[in-house]
Image (cartoon, rainbow, N blue to C red; front, side, top):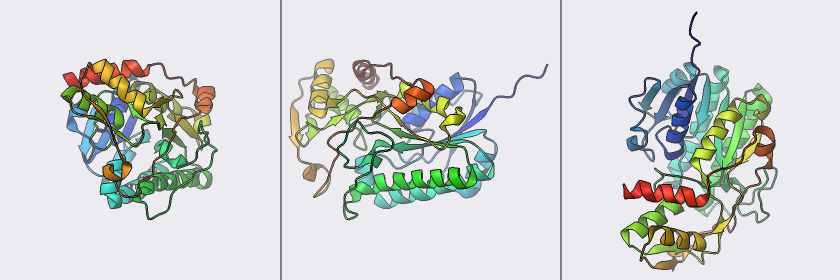
Length: 325
């Protein structure tokens, strides 16, 4: 009897924080995995535990390399598109890379997914809701952005353009495309280098540095463990009813940034001081932020039973353990 051929999944951004966990989850579910990353924000350390796996194939390269992308799409049965410029600090420091990678890169991936008729999951972001203050955010809510002279909004607009293009492929080309908007995904291996708040707080606390809160700290976020997120992504790409749809994936439990800092300080046993820094000093003059960012995940729960299981305290405990090692 001929053994059943393993399905192959392509993960763009596969050496990134989320991409590396997604690759792990796919391998654990019996997939063969092709991963591509240009290592601009990804790291070989993230996938060091996977490199020897017989079903893991890693390529250092760019999604802007069309011949390479065509070859990888052709040998894959499905595509998870995670490669993107991420993090508020990176967006401000390298706006050209942000816009070109997010828009042109996604266009290339979609073109070949369509040519080879592969289902594709596009990762978007809670940032697309912009300054909308109506929470929790539902997938049908309006996006409200600041002016184009504030580079901070270029990321949100570029990801919204990705969504428009993806849905255009679905409607016009009948392509099997699903969009997920991720809300503050966290876990071990995440770096604070580009402004991610939880690893930044943990590292500051463990080193005895000041724990730096931007603005008044009353802004709220909802954090979801990466190990709850990646199985949902795999379920969605394998659910035909998800094609042509947008889903919020995250946790609907809110916490203020000030309370998060206090939690990290307490859990690390740190003597660090908690200090406040104005946005203008931390980023750029006139910087704008979202005061609240919490998802309504009813749509994902109703379709695939999505429900985060890992509590914030457990995730922070695991991140602390990772950084101590």
